[in-house]
Length: 143
Image 1 (tube, rainbow, N blue to C red):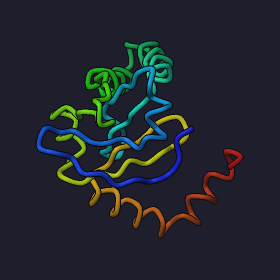
Image 2: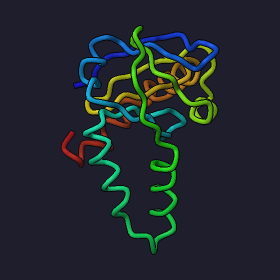
Image 3: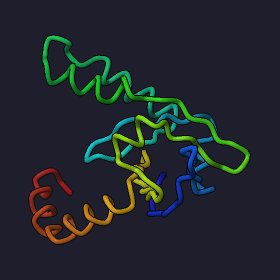
C-alpha cells in the first residue's frame, strides 16, 4: 500500500529517488504514465497490467474512450531503479506534468502520483479549502 507525501529533487537527466519503502513494493517492475490533473501515475507492474487491460477494453467506437485510452496507454513507460533507488522520468512525461527541479511523490493506496512541487502545493491548497464540500458529495458513494 502506498501512503504518504515525499519531496524529491529531479536531476538534469530526469532522475528522481523513490522512497525506499515504495521501492520494495515496486521491485517486480513499475510503469509511469500520464495521469490526471497534470500529474504522473506510477503503478506497480501487476497493477498496471490490470489497468491497461481495462483501458484496452474500452469501446473504440466512443471518442472519449479512445481519447482516454490514448492518454493513459500511449505515454506509458516501464521504469527501472538504478543503484541509488532512482527512476528516470522521460522528458515527454516531465513536460506533461510541468515537473522542473522539485517533485512530490504522493501515495494513493494502489499507485503513486508524481507532481511538480509548486503544482502540488496549489492543488492541495485549493482542494483543502473545499474538503467539506468534496466529502459531502462523496457521501453518496459510501465514503
